[in-house]
Length: 325
Ligand code: ADP
Ligand code: MG
Image (cartoon, rainbow, N blue to C red; front, side):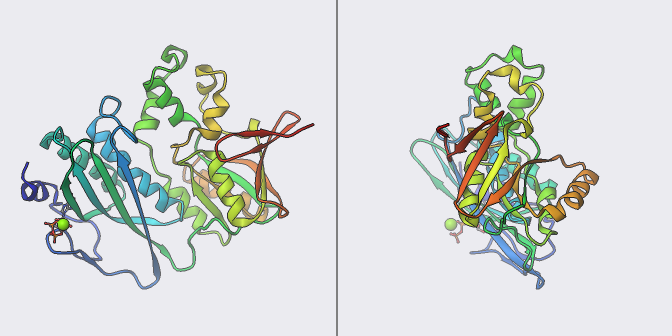
């Protein structure tokens, strides 16, 4: 495969962003930032056999997800994605059809958000694909949602549902029985083509004090990051956690998926109690599912507590730590 031929093929025929001055084709791209905005930038790498497998996902789905995980990070800042750059290491088994489909998968998601591909790098590798995607977005000045501003009394919330992606992965790995789910395709889709919650992030950034994180490593991990950054203790209630109706049918220990599974790419965070009703209504108007799952309890220690029936458990990033009674 010829590198220049490849670059020619993936170069967008038309671009969406009017602030783009020079896209693919020169040594670097040039764009004009909006004066009332701050730029939001992130990067994530996906490695074949570590983060994805072509016997589980098509190249199109892998491309879609490689961009989606980055767009989700922009969502978790309350921002709007605008541009992306792709560095790709191609192994000997990576033919033209695979690489083209990877880019088509990225483009499918990019088009929904009017994002433009503005550059990248192409190299050869000996064994596995490595795909690194950088996303550049923007947020109106001073409105980005960080992790450090939670206070006692705030509501803890989550957008969308939890555990579906982990269930999808377990189905792919034949760890659970697909016939138990009414709709196994739903869970597979959630794992292979996660939808970033950009619209929910926008609502969050319109409020003055929201903490936000996207659920990539699991709810327990994300909430611990907020607890640490804000120096607070968050308490969540197990029976409030939103899940798909079929999820509990698939596995007795489905709560493991919900708390530690990850890759749901929904948003979780905190908002002042006084703003909750307005926030909930705005989400409803936009058809966004948002669920109140707990409360910020106090500022004595950075921790996350799960309440289940009358039992309290400290949630570590990757596991439980049961309280002594
Ligand atoms: P340079 O040698 O100046 O780095 P390259 O020949 O690597 O330039 O790339 C030429 C143009 O194509 C640049 O605009 C670069 O950003 C873009 N490009 C190269 N590889 C990729 C890729 N895999 N995906 C997207 N754009 C790419
Ligand atoms: Mg180069």
